[in-house]
Image 1: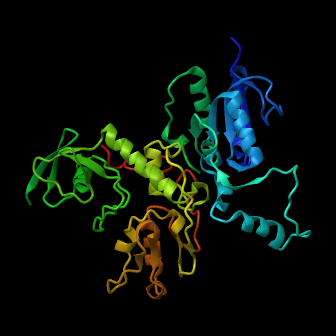
Image 2 (image 1 turned 90 degrees about the vertical axis):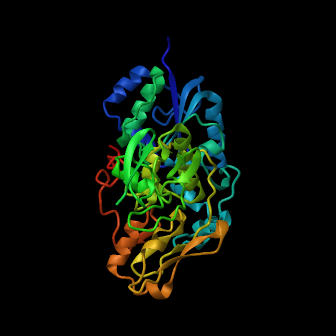
Length: 179
Length: 230
Protein backbone atom coordinates (compact mmCIF):
# COMPACT_ATOMS: atom_id res chain seq x y z
CA UNK A 1 0.00 0.00 0.00
CA UNK A 2 1.33 3.44 -0.86
CA UNK A 3 1.98 5.95 1.88
CA UNK A 4 -0.66 8.50 2.85
CA UNK A 5 -0.07 11.85 1.15
CA UNK A 6 0.11 15.09 3.17
CA UNK A 7 -0.10 18.64 1.85
CA UNK A 8 0.32 21.83 3.88
CA UNK A 9 -0.22 25.54 3.32
CA UNK A 10 0.26 28.78 5.17
CA UNK A 11 -2.50 31.29 4.37
CA UNK A 12 -2.77 34.43 6.54
CA UNK A 13 -0.33 33.00 9.06
CA UNK A 14 3.23 33.59 10.20
CA UNK A 15 4.66 30.14 9.45
CA UNK A 16 4.88 29.58 13.21
CA UNK A 17 2.64 26.51 12.92
CA UNK A 18 4.92 25.06 10.25
CA UNK A 19 7.86 25.76 12.55
CA UNK A 20 6.02 23.89 15.28
CA UNK A 21 5.60 20.95 12.89
CA UNK A 22 9.39 20.90 12.49
CA UNK A 23 9.59 21.05 16.28
CA UNK A 24 8.69 17.35 16.47
CA UNK A 25 12.49 16.95 16.35
CA UNK A 26 13.83 13.53 15.34
CA UNK A 27 10.31 12.19 14.97
CA UNK A 28 10.41 13.96 11.61
CA UNK A 29 12.44 10.97 10.35
CA UNK A 30 9.60 8.65 11.40
CA UNK A 31 7.16 11.05 9.76
CA UNK A 32 8.88 10.78 6.39
CA UNK A 33 8.67 7.01 6.72
CA UNK A 34 4.97 7.27 7.51
CA UNK A 35 3.82 9.81 4.92
CA UNK A 36 4.66 11.36 1.60
CA UNK A 37 4.54 15.15 1.26
CA UNK A 38 2.91 16.78 -1.73
CA UNK A 39 2.13 20.50 -2.17
CA UNK A 40 3.80 22.15 0.81
CA UNK A 41 6.31 24.87 1.68
CA UNK A 42 8.33 22.11 3.37
CA UNK A 43 9.30 20.42 0.08
CA UNK A 44 8.53 23.46 -2.08
CA UNK A 45 6.06 21.62 -4.33
CA UNK A 46 3.92 24.48 -5.64
CA UNK A 47 0.96 22.64 -7.21
CA UNK A 48 -0.92 19.48 -6.38
CA UNK A 49 0.46 16.57 -8.39
CA UNK A 50 -2.00 14.03 -6.98
CA UNK A 51 -4.98 13.59 -4.70
CA UNK A 52 -3.89 13.97 -1.04
CA UNK A 53 -5.15 12.30 2.10
CA UNK A 54 -4.47 15.02 4.63
CA UNK A 55 -4.30 18.77 4.11
CA UNK A 56 -2.96 20.92 6.94
CA UNK A 57 -3.91 24.59 6.85
CA UNK A 58 -2.15 27.29 8.80
CA UNK A 59 -3.65 30.78 8.87
CA UNK A 60 -7.09 32.17 8.06
CA UNK A 61 -8.28 33.88 4.89
CA UNK A 62 -7.46 37.58 4.52
CA UNK A 63 -7.44 37.87 0.72
CA UNK A 64 -8.82 36.29 -2.45
CA UNK A 65 -5.71 34.19 -2.99
CA UNK A 66 -6.11 32.58 0.46
CA UNK A 67 -9.69 31.66 -0.41
CA UNK A 68 -8.72 30.19 -3.77
CA UNK A 69 -5.85 28.27 -2.19
CA UNK A 70 -8.08 26.93 0.59
CA UNK A 71 -10.79 25.82 -1.87
CA UNK A 72 -8.08 24.13 -3.91
CA UNK A 73 -6.98 22.25 -0.81
CA UNK A 74 -10.54 21.19 -0.06
CA UNK A 75 -10.83 19.85 -3.60
CA UNK A 76 -7.56 17.93 -3.42
CA UNK A 77 -7.52 16.64 0.15
CA UNK A 78 -9.74 14.03 1.75
CA UNK A 79 -9.22 15.42 5.25
CA UNK A 80 -8.58 19.07 6.06
CA UNK A 81 -7.10 20.19 9.37
CA UNK A 82 -7.15 23.77 10.68
CA UNK A 83 -3.82 24.17 12.42
CA UNK A 84 -3.42 26.99 14.94
CA UNK A 85 -5.43 29.95 16.18
CA UNK A 86 -5.30 31.91 12.88
CA UNK A 87 -6.85 29.06 10.89
CA UNK A 88 -9.43 28.49 13.64
CA UNK A 89 -10.47 32.05 14.49
CA UNK A 90 -8.43 34.42 12.33
CA UNK A 91 -5.85 35.09 15.01
CA UNK A 92 -3.69 38.19 15.00
CA UNK A 93 -4.66 39.27 11.43
CA UNK A 94 -8.30 39.23 12.58
CA UNK A 95 -7.60 42.10 14.94
CA UNK A 96 -8.50 44.29 11.96
CA UNK A 97 -11.99 42.81 11.81
CA UNK A 98 -13.54 45.66 13.75
CA UNK A 99 -11.92 48.31 11.54
CA UNK A 100 -13.37 49.23 8.12
CA UNK A 101 -11.11 48.02 5.28
CA UNK A 102 -10.80 51.56 3.90
CA UNK A 103 -9.34 52.79 7.21
CA UNK A 104 -6.90 49.85 7.30
CA UNK A 105 -5.59 50.57 3.79
CA UNK A 106 -5.36 54.32 4.39
CA UNK A 107 -3.48 53.76 7.64
CA UNK A 108 -1.03 51.37 5.99
CA UNK A 109 -0.44 53.12 2.68
CA UNK A 110 -1.36 56.80 3.10
CA UNK A 111 -1.20 57.97 6.70
CA UNK A 112 1.60 55.91 8.19
CA UNK A 113 4.60 58.13 9.00
CA UNK A 114 7.01 55.91 7.08
CA UNK A 115 5.23 55.76 3.69
CA UNK A 116 6.95 57.41 0.75
CA UNK A 117 4.74 57.02 -2.35
CA UNK A 118 1.26 57.52 -1.05
CA UNK A 119 -0.61 54.98 -3.20
CA UNK A 120 -3.01 52.25 -2.19
CA UNK A 121 -1.80 49.28 -4.27
CA UNK A 122 -4.37 48.20 -6.82
CA UNK A 123 -3.15 45.89 -9.53
CA UNK A 124 -4.75 42.88 -11.21
CA UNK A 125 -1.74 40.83 -10.15
CA UNK A 126 -2.39 41.49 -6.49
CA UNK A 127 -4.94 39.44 -4.57
CA UNK A 128 -7.97 41.40 -3.41
CA UNK A 129 -8.02 41.99 0.32
CA UNK A 130 -11.22 40.72 2.01
CA UNK A 131 -13.58 42.84 4.11
CA UNK A 132 -12.40 40.94 7.16
CA UNK A 133 -10.29 37.92 8.06
CA UNK A 134 -12.25 34.66 7.89
CA UNK A 135 -11.54 31.48 9.83
CA UNK A 136 -11.01 28.56 7.42
CA UNK A 137 -14.18 26.75 8.51
CA UNK A 138 -16.29 29.72 7.42
CA UNK A 139 -15.00 29.24 3.84
CA UNK A 140 -14.82 25.44 3.43
CA UNK A 141 -15.63 22.41 5.54
CA UNK A 142 -12.85 21.64 7.99
CA UNK A 143 -12.64 18.16 9.51
CA UNK A 144 -10.34 18.69 12.48
CA UNK A 145 -9.07 21.60 14.57
CA UNK A 146 -5.73 21.74 16.36
CA UNK A 147 -5.54 24.94 18.41
CA UNK A 148 -2.48 26.72 19.74
CA UNK A 149 -0.26 29.65 18.96
CA UNK A 150 1.65 27.74 17.85
CA UNK A 151 0.03 24.32 18.39
CA UNK A 152 2.42 22.23 20.48
CA UNK A 153 4.62 19.88 18.43
CA UNK A 154 3.29 16.99 20.52
CA UNK A 155 -0.26 17.92 19.60
CA UNK A 156 0.53 17.92 15.87
CA UNK A 157 2.45 14.68 16.16
CA UNK A 158 -0.10 12.81 18.22
CA UNK A 159 -2.98 14.02 16.07
CA UNK A 160 -1.22 12.97 12.87
CA UNK A 161 -0.28 9.55 14.25
CA UNK A 162 -3.81 8.96 15.55
CA UNK A 163 -5.22 9.92 12.17
CA UNK A 164 -2.76 7.72 10.25
CA UNK A 165 -3.36 4.74 12.51
CA UNK A 166 -7.09 5.31 12.68
CA UNK A 167 -7.03 5.33 16.47
CA UNK A 168 -8.95 7.61 18.84
CA UNK A 169 -7.06 10.69 19.96
CA UNK A 170 -6.38 10.75 23.68
CA UNK A 171 -4.50 13.96 24.37
CA UNK A 172 -2.73 14.88 27.61
CA UNK A 173 -4.01 18.12 29.19
CA UNK A 174 -0.75 20.01 28.58
CA UNK A 175 -0.75 19.78 24.80
CA UNK A 176 -4.00 21.57 23.99
CA UNK A 177 -3.45 25.27 24.61
CA UNK A 178 -4.72 28.39 22.87
CA UNK A 179 -1.46 30.34 23.22
CA UNK B 1 -26.43 23.88 62.49
CA UNK B 2 -28.74 21.41 60.82
CA UNK B 3 -27.09 18.91 58.50
CA UNK B 4 -28.71 18.38 55.13
CA UNK B 5 -28.42 15.15 53.17
CA UNK B 6 -28.62 15.25 49.39
CA UNK B 7 -27.15 13.39 46.40
CA UNK B 8 -25.11 14.47 43.37
CA UNK B 9 -25.21 11.90 40.54
CA UNK B 10 -26.18 9.33 43.13
CA UNK B 11 -23.30 10.15 45.48
CA UNK B 12 -24.43 10.70 49.09
CA UNK B 13 -23.46 14.21 50.18
CA UNK B 14 -23.83 16.22 53.35
CA UNK B 15 -24.14 19.96 53.60
CA UNK B 16 -25.05 22.79 55.92
CA UNK B 17 -28.31 24.65 55.95
CA UNK B 18 -28.13 27.71 53.68
CA UNK B 19 -25.30 26.43 51.48
CA UNK B 20 -25.72 26.62 47.73
CA UNK B 21 -25.31 23.50 45.58
CA UNK B 22 -21.92 24.72 44.33
CA UNK B 23 -20.59 25.31 47.85
CA UNK B 24 -21.92 22.05 49.26
CA UNK B 25 -20.66 20.09 46.25
CA UNK B 26 -17.19 21.54 46.78
CA UNK B 27 -17.19 20.40 50.42
CA UNK B 28 -18.07 16.92 49.19
CA UNK B 29 -15.30 16.83 46.58
CA UNK B 30 -17.57 17.34 43.58
CA UNK B 31 -16.64 19.99 41.04
CA UNK B 32 -19.42 21.95 39.43
CA UNK B 33 -17.94 24.37 36.88
CA UNK B 34 -18.49 28.06 37.61
CA UNK B 35 -17.46 31.25 35.87
CA UNK B 36 -19.42 34.22 37.23
CA UNK B 37 -19.28 32.80 40.75
CA UNK B 38 -16.53 34.07 43.04
CA UNK B 39 -16.08 32.81 46.56
CA UNK B 40 -17.09 35.45 49.08
CA UNK B 41 -19.34 37.37 46.68
CA UNK B 42 -23.10 37.17 46.58
CA UNK B 43 -23.92 34.76 43.71
CA UNK B 44 -25.33 36.41 40.60
CA UNK B 45 -26.14 33.43 38.38
CA UNK B 46 -25.29 35.29 35.18
CA UNK B 47 -23.25 32.77 33.20
CA UNK B 48 -25.26 29.55 33.66
CA UNK B 49 -22.22 27.29 33.35
CA UNK B 50 -23.02 25.75 36.74
CA UNK B 51 -26.43 24.58 35.50
CA UNK B 52 -27.42 21.27 37.10
CA UNK B 53 -30.62 19.28 37.02
CA UNK B 54 -32.70 19.17 40.16
CA UNK B 55 -35.72 16.93 39.86
CA UNK B 56 -35.40 17.19 36.06
CA UNK B 57 -35.32 20.99 36.10
CA UNK B 58 -32.33 23.08 35.04
CA UNK B 59 -31.12 25.19 37.96
CA UNK B 60 -28.12 27.46 38.50
CA UNK B 61 -26.12 25.59 41.15
CA UNK B 62 -24.44 28.79 42.36
CA UNK B 63 -27.72 30.40 43.42
CA UNK B 64 -29.83 27.40 44.43
CA UNK B 65 -29.64 26.38 48.09
CA UNK B 66 -29.49 22.71 48.98
CA UNK B 67 -32.54 21.08 50.55
CA UNK B 68 -33.08 17.80 52.36
CA UNK B 69 -33.21 14.82 49.99
CA UNK B 70 -32.40 16.92 46.94
CA UNK B 71 -31.27 14.85 43.93
CA UNK B 72 -28.80 16.75 41.80
CA UNK B 73 -27.61 15.63 38.39
CA UNK B 74 -24.27 17.17 37.45
CA UNK B 75 -21.92 15.05 35.38
CA UNK B 76 -24.34 13.96 32.66
CA UNK B 77 -23.83 14.17 28.92
CA UNK B 78 -26.66 16.63 28.29
CA UNK B 79 -25.35 19.14 30.85
CA UNK B 80 -21.72 18.73 29.86
CA UNK B 81 -22.54 19.48 26.23
CA UNK B 82 -24.68 22.46 27.21
CA UNK B 83 -21.85 23.83 29.36
CA UNK B 84 -19.44 23.42 26.48
CA UNK B 85 -21.92 25.24 24.25
CA UNK B 86 -22.09 28.14 26.72
CA UNK B 87 -18.30 28.41 26.74
CA UNK B 88 -18.25 28.38 22.95
CA UNK B 89 -20.94 31.06 22.85
CA UNK B 90 -18.89 33.25 25.17
CA UNK B 91 -15.89 32.80 22.89
CA UNK B 92 -17.73 33.86 19.73
CA UNK B 93 -19.73 36.73 21.20
CA UNK B 94 -16.60 38.62 22.32
CA UNK B 95 -13.19 39.04 20.73
CA UNK B 96 -11.13 36.48 22.61
CA UNK B 97 -7.67 36.40 21.11
CA UNK B 98 -5.84 34.15 23.54
CA UNK B 99 -2.38 34.52 21.94
CA UNK B 100 -2.45 38.29 22.49
CA UNK B 101 -4.03 38.29 25.95
CA UNK B 102 -2.08 38.86 29.12
CA UNK B 103 -4.49 36.71 31.13
CA UNK B 104 -3.89 33.65 28.94
CA UNK B 105 -2.96 30.69 31.14
CA UNK B 106 -4.68 32.30 34.14
CA UNK B 107 -8.01 32.85 32.40
CA UNK B 108 -10.98 30.92 33.73
CA UNK B 109 -12.92 31.04 30.47
CA UNK B 110 -9.91 29.58 28.64
CA UNK B 111 -9.40 27.00 31.40
CA UNK B 112 -13.03 25.90 31.08
CA UNK B 113 -12.56 25.61 27.31
CA UNK B 114 -9.54 23.37 27.98
CA UNK B 115 -11.49 21.31 30.48
CA UNK B 116 -14.34 20.78 28.06
CA UNK B 117 -12.01 20.06 25.14
CA UNK B 118 -13.09 22.97 22.96
CA UNK B 119 -11.03 22.78 19.78
CA UNK B 120 -13.11 25.34 17.86
CA UNK B 121 -16.47 26.92 18.70
CA UNK B 122 -19.48 25.45 16.91
CA UNK B 123 -21.01 28.92 16.45
CA UNK B 124 -19.95 31.62 13.96
CA UNK B 125 -17.76 34.43 15.32
CA UNK B 126 -19.62 37.69 15.84
CA UNK B 127 -16.68 40.14 15.85
CA UNK B 128 -18.47 42.74 17.97
CA UNK B 129 -17.02 46.24 18.11
CA UNK B 130 -16.14 46.93 21.74
CA UNK B 131 -14.24 49.81 23.27
CA UNK B 132 -11.04 49.60 25.29
CA UNK B 133 -10.75 52.08 28.15
CA UNK B 134 -7.15 52.89 29.01
CA UNK B 135 -7.92 56.23 30.69
CA UNK B 136 -8.52 54.75 34.14
CA UNK B 137 -5.54 55.05 36.50
CA UNK B 138 -3.88 51.73 37.39
CA UNK B 139 -6.11 49.48 35.25
CA UNK B 140 -7.10 48.79 31.64
CA UNK B 141 -10.63 47.84 30.80
CA UNK B 142 -10.73 45.75 27.61
CA UNK B 143 -14.37 45.08 26.87
CA UNK B 144 -13.47 42.78 23.95
CA UNK B 145 -12.82 40.10 26.54
CA UNK B 146 -15.60 40.88 29.00
CA UNK B 147 -18.08 38.08 29.70
CA UNK B 148 -20.27 40.25 31.94
CA UNK B 149 -20.02 38.01 34.95
CA UNK B 150 -20.42 41.07 37.19
CA UNK B 151 -17.67 39.94 39.54
CA UNK B 152 -16.02 43.39 39.42
CA UNK B 153 -19.38 45.10 39.88
CA UNK B 154 -20.12 43.01 42.97
CA UNK B 155 -16.64 42.81 44.40
CA UNK B 156 -14.87 46.15 43.96
CA UNK B 157 -16.24 48.92 46.13
CA UNK B 158 -14.90 51.98 47.90
CA UNK B 159 -14.54 52.07 51.67
CA UNK B 160 -18.02 53.51 52.01
CA UNK B 161 -19.46 50.75 49.84
CA UNK B 162 -19.90 52.59 46.55
CA UNK B 163 -19.43 50.52 43.38
CA UNK B 164 -16.49 51.46 41.15
CA UNK B 165 -17.69 49.24 38.28
CA UNK B 166 -21.20 49.16 36.91
CA UNK B 167 -23.27 48.17 33.90
CA UNK B 168 -24.55 50.62 31.31
CA UNK B 169 -27.04 50.12 28.46
CA UNK B 170 -29.27 47.10 27.98
CA UNK B 171 -29.50 43.83 26.05
CA UNK B 172 -26.79 43.26 23.48
CA UNK B 173 -25.36 46.72 24.12
CA UNK B 174 -24.76 46.09 27.83
CA UNK B 175 -21.23 46.87 28.89
CA UNK B 176 -19.09 47.35 31.96
CA UNK B 177 -18.31 50.94 32.77
CA UNK B 178 -16.13 52.59 35.37
CA UNK B 179 -17.13 55.48 37.58
CA UNK B 180 -14.39 57.98 36.65
CA UNK B 181 -14.54 59.89 39.92
CA UNK B 182 -14.34 56.81 42.14
CA UNK B 183 -11.75 55.11 39.91
CA UNK B 184 -9.46 58.13 40.21
CA UNK B 185 -8.67 57.12 43.79
CA UNK B 186 -8.36 53.39 43.14
CA UNK B 187 -5.60 51.85 45.27
CA UNK B 188 -2.89 49.42 44.11
CA UNK B 189 -4.57 46.73 46.14
CA UNK B 190 -7.99 47.33 44.63
CA UNK B 191 -6.48 47.29 41.13
CA UNK B 192 -4.77 43.97 41.84
CA UNK B 193 -7.97 42.61 43.35
CA UNK B 194 -10.00 43.70 40.33
CA UNK B 195 -7.59 41.93 37.99
CA UNK B 196 -7.62 38.80 40.12
CA UNK B 197 -11.38 38.84 40.36
CA UNK B 198 -11.90 39.22 36.60
CA UNK B 199 -12.15 35.65 35.25
CA UNK B 200 -10.93 36.81 31.83
CA UNK B 201 -8.50 39.48 30.64
CA UNK B 202 -11.01 42.34 30.64
CA UNK B 203 -9.49 44.04 33.69
CA UNK B 204 -5.71 44.20 33.67
CA UNK B 205 -3.39 46.00 36.02
CA UNK B 206 -1.22 48.60 34.35
CA UNK B 207 2.58 48.51 34.38
CA UNK B 208 2.81 44.77 34.95
CA UNK B 209 2.39 42.11 32.35
CA UNK B 210 3.29 38.55 31.46
CA UNK B 211 4.93 38.18 34.88
CA UNK B 212 4.50 34.41 35.12
CA UNK B 213 6.23 32.42 32.36
CA UNK B 214 4.38 29.90 30.17
CA UNK B 215 4.33 26.55 31.92
CA UNK B 216 3.97 28.04 35.41
CA UNK B 217 0.62 29.76 35.03
CA UNK B 218 -2.47 28.70 36.94
CA UNK B 219 -4.02 26.41 34.34
CA UNK B 220 -0.92 25.32 32.39
CA UNK B 221 -0.61 21.85 33.86
CA UNK B 222 -3.82 21.19 35.82
CA UNK B 223 -7.39 21.53 34.59
CA UNK B 224 -9.65 23.99 36.38
CA UNK B 225 -11.53 22.24 39.17
CA UNK B 226 -8.90 19.56 39.76
CA UNK B 227 -8.28 20.97 43.25
CA UNK B 228 -11.94 20.29 44.12
CA UNK B 229 -12.62 17.01 42.33
CA UNK B 230 -11.82 14.11 44.60
